[in-house]
View 1 (cartoon, rainbow, N blue to C red):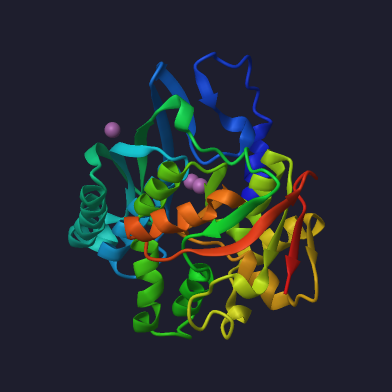
View 2 (view 1 turned 60 degrees about the horizontal axis):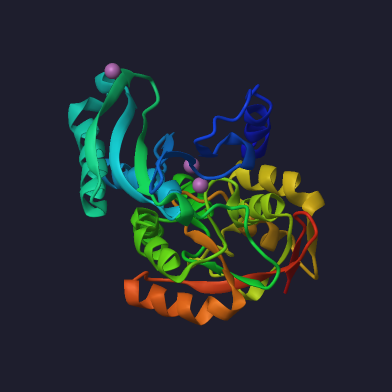
Length: 327
Ligand code: CO
Ligand code: CO
Ligand code: CO
């Protein structure tokens, strides 16, 4: 079952009538839910947790927290509070390991200016950690994935390949040292990039996670009823990702199979496919900015200290979620 199958299950839940203060709900495959509290305050809520993707418990805690906050940043909101969700085999892995995971989460929250209010822990054979995060935004300034327009330029704020490299590390094909750059990237908050896009005023945004660049772009394209083009040459990759593409996780093939009918490759290879569909953990923001504001966004990203950003494609026309991948 891939992420899109899960989304289908959710979409078919009976939703009833839409409450008037619900601004963004389950119907648009958006990153977080948004509920309007007053004329100038909207509540933005999300939750995310997973099994360890790195060996070091402190790193894992930080990555899980950065990942959980990312959906708030993708919507142009500011995270303010969070709660821990913990499943842990204390008997086998020990209290010290658990406290390192939690310290990672807490430190990342502090870096983000998020207050950790508490949480809930259960015993479980396989460890899992994440957070529910609550943010605030002005109701008129929420950035969704559903307003991308023809003429927009697509900007990505982190390189791809964390799924492939994590799988390679698990298989012993690369050392933990060779994974450091990917781990640092996964620990990096999307805060600065989010601030820059809100300051600029952009049309749409989503963050890149389990559905890969191609999957999340397709969600944006279909929610916005547009078609897009990405240029393979301009897609930024972590070092060694192409050498290790044969180790792409099962999720990459599942994503690629699902997305096949919405994608046209011009002179592409299977390697492109696997990288573009590689499930990312705590990936970057994919921002759809009007062409005439691209310069302003780049300048704002630079000024905010968002470490990395690059143009990967554009919104080409008005036709329901088709993506062309050019060399
Ligand atoms: Co997301
Ligand atoms: Co999420
Ligand atoms: Co409880």
